[in-house]
Length: 433
Image (cartoon, rainbow, N blue to C red; front, side):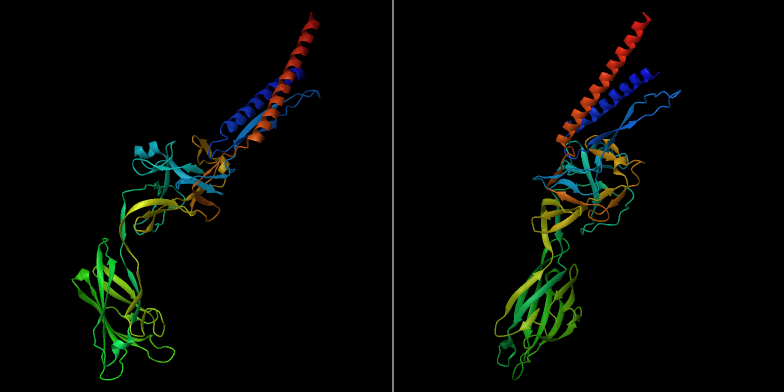
């Protein structure tokens, strides 16, 4: 019984070291595979109770585990949609075959890195057929609320290179100096005019006309103007009219003193803004707060539109795409506008090592891994998303080769034990003869 248990234990040792060698060979073979997680094999002894005080060899058992929570270092690339997770968390992906099948929501898989390129449908896909998943943004670039404990809200991240976008103008800032000499009794009274282009809700170019008419007094200076605002989208109709009075006191001379609304939206002295209704809706115009040098001033003898700025943009084509550290996918257009079109969350689980390993460095949540949660990248326990980068293999080739030498020696030793047991059994057989 004892000698046969020695044989069985050595056979178990051969099998255990063969399993360890299989894991080592897999690690070495994937030493250049981006996103690969190494497999580690550990041994556990088996103890069998003997009879009559005799020792019985139990042998050994090998257990292999993929260390999903141990990633590799990051390697820079030149592709803006090469993505890697720095820290904890995984990028959600799905198989292109399941997405194309259209049979309900595709199963969410997880990976730590991927080199994504657009396919014929504009989706970001890897060469192995993994589609990047994310939450679609609203037309204004905001991300609506989605459930965080399910993948139901995720959609394939799609980049439409033929996408057109325009932003309507909603605010205009005036930095204009009016000539103080134009409000003197000897002035000609000729109005000062200004045209400001803006973009309507359909991206069309329209114009706000601003006429500054000085009030000419019988003597001295009035320091008063009437500002009339018109809109080309309404056929040149007046959309606001305001009486402006400027201060001439020492220290505050040339600044706005008072604004009286004749028509249009009211002026707010706390913010220095007024609101007028153009053809597409309300527009905010900043003319400055009283007794400050911002906005409108009245100094010297020259009309000077020093700074007239506005938001909005004409219709433009998408030119580039980039993903920031928080997982927001930004599309940049040839007009200089940047808009968020998707958000890629990071998925975290209590036990990443409990996930089921699949092809192409992907993993599927399981009962052992625990319930997953979709975080904003950089929030909670998750790390951030790095673009222009891929995560290298977690394999340390030097360590694997060292383990391979140890495994080879252990395998040879077990084989030697079997040979010794065989010789002992042979001697026993010779005794019978």
